[in-house]
Amino acid sequence: MWRAACRLASAAGAVGAGGDGAAVRTLAPAICQARRSRSFRPADVPSPLPFLGLRGGAVWPGSGERISLRKISIATMPEINTDDLDKQQVQLLAEMCIVIDENDNRIGADTKKNCHLNENIEKGLLHRAFSVFLFNSENKLLLQQRSDAKITFPDCFTNTCCSHPLSTPLELEENNTIGVRRAAQRRLQAELGIPMEQVTPEEIFYLTRIHYKARSNGIWGEHEIDYILFVQKNVTLNPDPNEIKSYCYVTQNELKELLEKASRNEVKITPWFKLIAETFLFKWWDNLNHLKKFVDHAKIHRM
Image 1 (tube, one colour):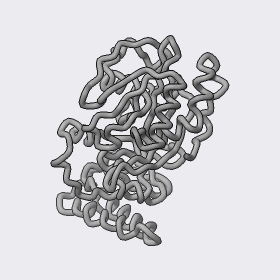
Image 2 (cartoon, one colour):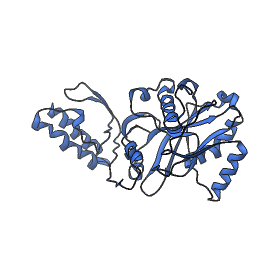
Image 3 (tube, one colour):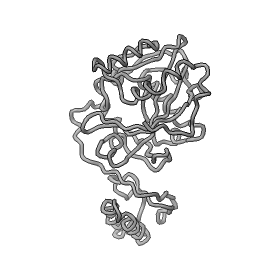
Image 4 (cartoon, helix red, strand yellow):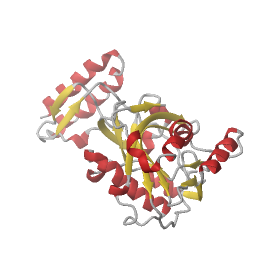
């Protein structure tokens, strides 16, 4: 078993020699350590390499577990001191996000921490996300102001809810985008206290996707393919203060005033919300009863 594993590692180093070969070759000694115990499991691969992608496919020796082999793409795990960050938010950094390629194909998983480090983002690490826009019966949009405890874009105004589906069976499911919509339901409850029975996945309408990248500061940032989700419903709110500093329902004119204030640096807004608001939001808002004509699941809008 260990011989097959070593051959796979050696092949990885050879294929990656054109660019990432040095990084990939660091995997070979770790895999070949299995020689000492005559055993090998996928879990033996060191965590600093969240996924190894070569072209084709292979089965881990002796396990029967199939892995996809794609173009080399390696994310590092720089050591970051989190002592000064909010403890509750730091705990969430261990969640496993869904790592994707630029066409939103799932290619692996990595921690929320690693997915949001600029050092990894600049090397191409990209993950799946969603943004929810919830409107009440008066067609007002629910906004939130992110808490000061948030690690990325604290104190910024943004749309109703922004987060990530996790690399779990329920949220990995891609048929009819059900995994992303389940994740949105989960986070609406976690952030805003909206009872899960008040907004079901079936009531969350998937419009399209955007791809964007933005730095929050010198260490943390975002690089996401973001699913745009609409909800039209009156809901009960009980926000978590660790997630949300304030919230409000706004009309179109009130949002335009907020965007103008942001342009004068009087308030802060998240970059993805700014992009969506300036490009798409108001035409969608004008057509809340006719959203189907704006559905575009084939295209990923590069922002």
